[in-house]
Image (tube, rainbow, N blue to C red; front, side, top):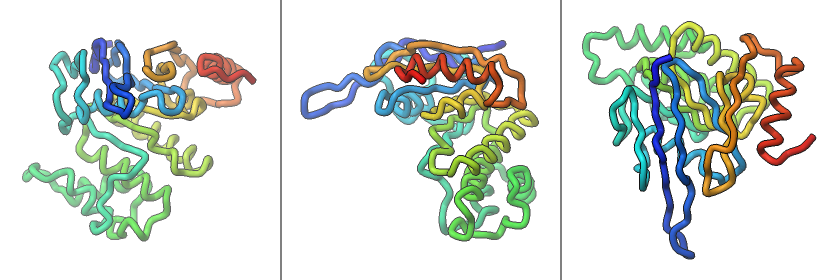
Length: 248
C-alpha cells in the first residue's frame, strides 16, 4: 500500500503559567493510501492537537508531516476536517452549504453535484432546508456531505459523532462506511469511543497520557460489516481498553 501520510517525530508544547507544557512528544507513524486509521487515548492527552498538526492548522515545534511525500505546512483542499463542533453556515441552505466548497470550480454543475451528495447521505428532499430546520443527525450528515463534495484525498475526523446519541451515531457511522466503500478516501479518526474505532477502522493507534506518544497499535482484521458483539471484536475491545488502563 502506497504511503499517503507520513508523520515524522512530531513534537509540540504550549505556553502555560508554569512554563512550557509538552503535549505531543515524538510521534512517528504513517497512513497508507485508502487506509482508515483511528486514534484513541485518554482525555486531554493531545489527540486533537495531533490531528490539527497533521491537518495543517497547527505547526509542530519539531518534526514534519508529509502528504504524498511533500511537506504539509498549511491546510489545503486535499484534506478536509470534520470536527465535533460543526462547520456548516447557519445562514445557508443545505444545497448552498455544499456548493460553498465548490467555489473556484466554474466548470462544475455545482447545484447538481451538491444535490447528488445530499442524496448520498440521506438528505434528498432537504436541499433547501436551513441548518436550524434539521435534526442533530441530519446536520451531521450535511457536514459529512459538505466534506465529501469536494472529493478530498483525506478525511480528518475529530470526534465527529460525539454529540449524537448512541443510535444516531451508529446509523451515521454505517452511512459513512457505506460512502467510503463507494468513494475511496484516506481517513484519520480521533475518538474516545473504542467501539467506534473497532467498528470503522483498519488500524487503531492508542496514545499515552500527555505528553503523548504512540503506546500501542492494533490491526483490525474483522471484515465489514462488523458485529461489535462478535468474539473477535470483544477480544480487541478488551485489549485496547487494557492499554488505556481500563480493566473489565
